[in-house]
Length: 119
Image 1 (cartoon, rainbow, N blue to C red):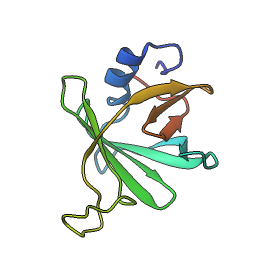
Image 2 (cartoon, one colour):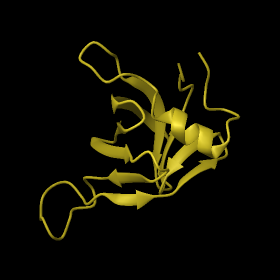
Image 3 (cartoon, rainbow, N blue to C red):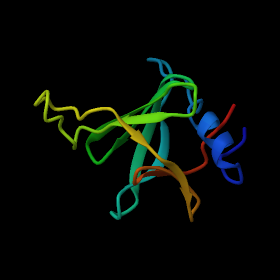
Image 4 (cartoon, rainbow, N blue to C red):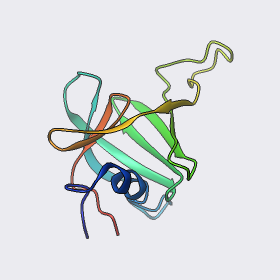
């Protein structure tokens, strides 16, 4: 089992979406997450469709991510309600994927850190 530590951004992005298979039988991956400049806290990552859809559960929120296969990742955060829908979930917005010291993988300020298995 590998980890994201030391991988390039492109490899990490492609591999980070294949962390665990989302199913009733699979346990979510336990990580540490940070929202913006907030504190690091325990979180979980669930994979719905490897390489396509995953989610982080952090601070009582489920933040959804999807990857279109061309390198574009979008995020839906319930803390950002959509003005058009007025619903609880925010719009799907494109995100920049970056590495920060720690190391941690971040999507527009939502960061995950830990030994994320790649296979």
